[in-house]
Image 1 (cartoon, one colour):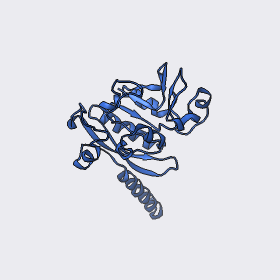
Image 2: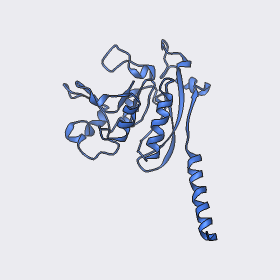
Image 3: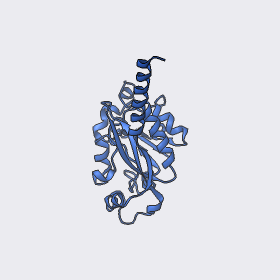
Image 4: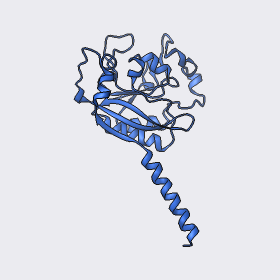
Length: 213
């Protein structure tokens, strides 16, 4: 092997190592700083879940402009390792995610988080228009790119978030929408391979953003 080729191979390997070392996929017990942020927001008074039931994730992701970021997510400890694996695979595939911030940055307001196309998990709240607790209340559900994958009430036509109407209906879902989740989508396949259910398969409510277990 000549010197030039050897040096070139070494440079490529060094660059690959740098890229790999820049990736972040970690799971922790909830740090004090994060726990403080959650109080009165995603973790309100009366929340039945214990701090020890939750985990804090840091996850690398690629946005719609191809830029790398490290996102934050709180989830139930039961699915922490699954989410680590899913989002690592999405990152490696260059799957675009617009935003991944704790919903506490939006004062635990799901509408604001969805309108910002923010991917999130834990938030102790009721199902919209219901007294039942959402799976998000247990940290067992994830909403991915919710602006491009809105929640659609089939009978009334109501769309959440309202800003997602352009991506809501069947004729719109057939278009080549960036980050669109359907049964051919990588995100869909990865979540279902880990035992999650997809809200887009429901009958009276099409929650395209939503995966739960």
